[in-house]
Amino acid sequence: MSDSHIITSLQHPLVKHMVKLRTDKDYRNGQKALVLEGLKPIQVASKGIIKILHTEEYSSYVLELSGEKWLVTAPILQKISGMTTPEGIVAEIRMPDYVDLKDAWQVLALDTVSDPGNMGTLLRTALALGWDAVFFFAGRL
Image (cartoon, rainbow, N blue to C red; front, side, top):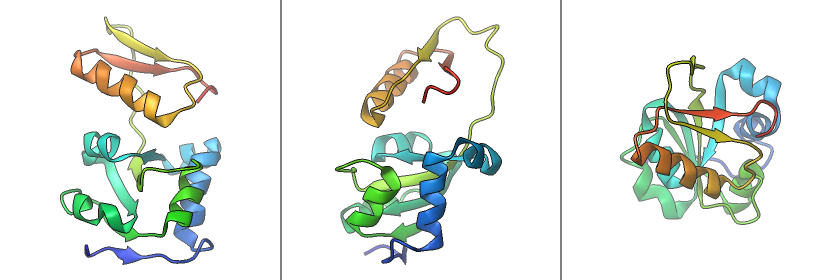
């Protein structure tokens, strides 16, 4: 097992914080943080990780990642992610700074992408192709 802190209650303040980050845009913007789900997206965003919450099966994967580590149960992870069958790992990451796109040549524009897996695939593809930026339509994600 990793050197993670342990959470066993759905009422834990960190669980409430993570759910609020996922569901409340004003809170997310105020905290300048967001919730990211899935091992691959978390590994890509490794420099911005604040906290990682994971189930036992992901204990060995989080050893290489920075940030506070919290071991949680599957029901807790399900509550945080909002997904019926979450992957088993979520992270609180620093919100990226907004940048001016006027000089960007290849931009991925995302509008109403509701599946985190699909969004991750799109973002990884744009990164692999060397695209300049990603634009999220306001109020749609």
